[in-house]
Length: 215
Image (tube, rainbow, N blue to C red):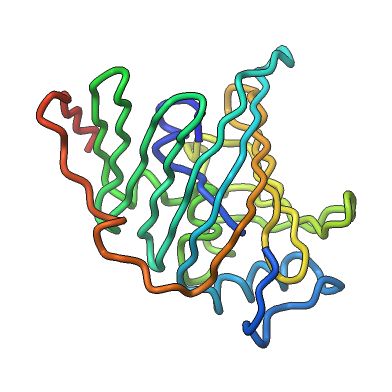
């Protein structure tokens, strides 16, 4: 996710396409809040693709992004931007690493500082969502049931995140950050509860990159 440095490290990362064999997932007609809780409770890992568009506070559009994601509860995820440039954000559950190859720089944060009350916590985390967010139902539109998550902490780095659900799965994320930027993310190609190699959530700082610790 390409927000401010803080918001990008939070990843909002966030997920997910027709699941066969996942009995018990919330039905499309159920409220988005029920679908979110069922997703958090039942989908322990996933992989898929994302596409993202972002506009700044003046409405100017940035170049679209696309790439791959994976997550494993609690707190491990990989958010890999592949187009139009390369960027990688990885959480091993303890630390979050953001690698910008063009800048030859890696930023490291503690996971509890980077994820906390972030969009990533909504879908990558576990436990009670009510502790970190005020959850508000929104009107249905575009064939989706919508939920708005407003962080309870003032330093979360974003104002609110709207999540659109269908068939018990998050399909879209629309995030307003603290700088007035709006990011719209579409999730496709979900594989739910796969076995993901541990290396997907590990990161080694490249020899030619500078490491900046933000702890």
